[in-house]
Image 1 (cartoon, rainbow, N blue to C red):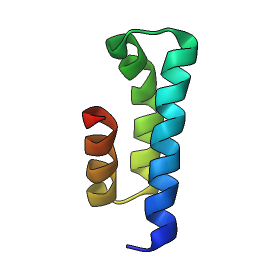
Image 2: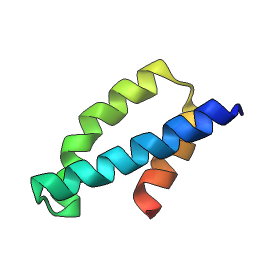
Image 3: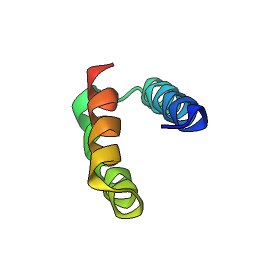
Length: 60
């Protein structure tokens, strides 16, 4: 995996955390909204990279 991919994923994860704070949503509510974006992500990327991204998103 290239360094740019790692930094991109880290930046995206921070952005989603900040967005959820700004919206003041509970985690579950935010996850339901995020599901639509996840399906788009899954269409554009292979299943393995999506699984890694999803795991990182839910554990932090």
